[in-house]
Structures are given as C-alpha cells and as structure tokens.
Amino acid sequence: MPENTGRGPYAKGIARRQQILREALAAYAESDSAGPSLRAIATRVGLSERGLLHYFPARDELLVAIFAERDASDVAHFDPDATIEALPAMVAHTARTPGLSRLLLEMIAAATDEGHAAHRYFTDRYRALRGVLADKFRHSVERPGPAPLPAVDPDFAARILTAASDGLQAQRLLDPSIDLEDDLDRLTRLLLSAASRPDRR
Image (cartoon, rainbow, N blue to C red):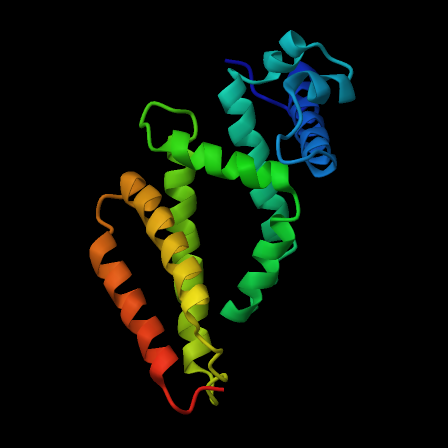
C-alpha cells in the first residue's frame, strides 16, 4: 500500500470533509429547531445531495460527524482548568443552536441501537464526559470555602429530576453498569437536603 504523504486526492478529500462540517455547523446556527436539510448543506459547499454523501458513508455518518465537530469546537473554547461552575454557561452556549439541540436528542435516542452509526460515538462521549465532570466536581469540592447553596423549590426539583430520569435512562442503555435507581435516589435526597437546610442562602 503506498504511503500517505498528506498530499493529493486523499488530502483534498479530508479538506473537503472539513469544509462540509464547518458549513453544516454554520447552517445549523442559522436554522430553527428543525435544522437544515441535506440539500441546504450541500448547496453551501456547491454539491448535490449525492455528491455530499460521497464524502460520508451514509446520512447518519454525516450527522455523527457534524455533532463530533460541534463537540470538538466546544472543547477548544472550554477552559480545561475551569471548575464545575463553568458547566452551565458552556451548556447554555451550545443550546443557543436549537437545531443542534434537537439533533443531540435524536442522535442519543438512535445511539441506543448498537448497530447505529452514533452508538460508539455517544457511548465514548458519555464515558469521557462523566470522567471530566467528576474530576472538576472533585476539585471544586476540595477548594476552601463552600459556595452558597442556591434555593431549591419544588419546580426546580421537578425539572432536575425529570432531566436526570430521562438522561440516565439514555445513558444506561449505552452503559448498563449505571444504577439508575440509586442515582435518582441520591439526587432526590440531595435536593431534599438542600431544600430543608435552614442556613441555605
């Protein structure tokens, strides 16, 4: 097999793929929650839909690649030394693109099928994300001076418990070692404890 020198058709194909992914993210940023069509993405790079899929094995492969590119962009702009308190702002930033938020939910649901193109990516993604957040949480807890506790009201608790329940079910389908019942029990107890503390600020 000839050695890949990083030049010629191979390099041009890689560059074209990157162009497609950049333009796809731009198209998502400009679209509503429905997201752009493949035709709209293809038009941005001067290709037909068939020509667009020449650079990816299938539509689902393209969608996974788009999301991976979005994740890579987020990581590049996320301070690796930031504490866990930086997470809400980061998530809020990514959620400003409703089409990508909808794509995330659709891909997570599809990824629970072991044969789907998104399965490996999201299995690895959740494992890596849990590791990063666990480290950040650990470092934040070890800092001197605890942060003031926010108010925990029933509506807030309901939103958090619903999000955790739905999200943990998806994660458990990707990683059966997750104990959904125990995680939800601990979260419920934490919320009740924070809500009942007389010194919360």
